[in-house]
Amino acid sequence: MNKKQILILGGTTEARDLAARLATREDIDVVLSLAGRTADPAPQPTPVRIGGFGGVGGLVAYLRSNAVDLLVDATHPFARRISVNARQASAESGVPLLRLERAGWDPVAGDQWVRVSSVDEAATALGHEPRRIFLAIGRQEVAAFEAAPQHHYLVRSVDPVEPPLDVPSAEYSLARGPFEIEGEIRLLRNHRIDAIVSKNSGGEATYAKIAAARALRLTVIMIERAQPSDGITAENVGDAVRLVDHLISPDKKRGV
Ligand code: NAP
Figure 1: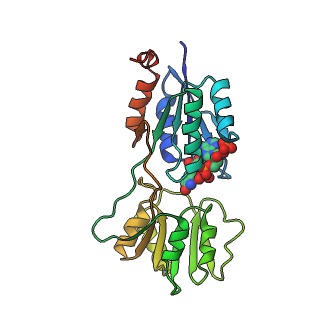
Figure 2: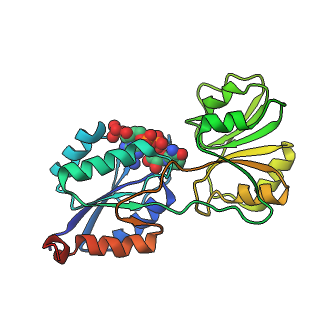
């Protein structure tokens, strides 16, 4: 059987789940691609390649030399560069692209969100008065909060923040989701947190902090996504599997 080759750009729970679903199929070979940011990545259900491709040109070369039939961009909603590269590489190579992007969260009754459009705006939105802030945005962009050194920061990330924040008062918590609401409430109480900074990542694995903030009536500075995806998009793994079937079907190749 001529197996279809699928490359999944990953680094998310959804990418891992989709890879696991496709790994059971005999008509498909799947490779999952990780950026290599996490020192000790979670185990993955399919063969993995690790590290950048070297921009659009490198990704196009990879698609061609591995005769990839379908590219799936299942990277994090806030991983913008790689998604732009994926769109360009798909256009240049003619390899179809499927975007798997979970929906963002919407506020519900009791939420006190301040919605901002960037990490820099989030730092400003914390205000002048010193407060105790929980930064739950990963480690890559936390340096933006050095612009607001009057606050105390509790920073949670999977890998250590290196170098540490250049602010007078910060502490660090290393943890990998999923998180439970009881644990998040305990964390926020123990550290006497006044406000949380979060990305509007969507999904369940990291929603507990938002629910915990609601329960404790804390403000959430919510960093919103830049723009919705265009192109062929699935919001969940089930829909992605159906679209994969459509995109790799022989009818599709004939343009039916
Ligand atoms: P980014 O800014 O969009 O990408 C920067 C560069 O990293 C890309 O140009 C590419 O290098 C490489 N890269 C990114 N994702 C890759 C992948 N899956 N496979 C191979 N190379 C990849 O990405 P980021 O925000 O640093 O995120 C890096 C990874 O962490 C992504 O896989 C993402 O899914 C995951 N993640 C990100 C966030 C977040 O908040 N940003 C949160 C959770 C998980 P080349 O140009 O050399 O190909």
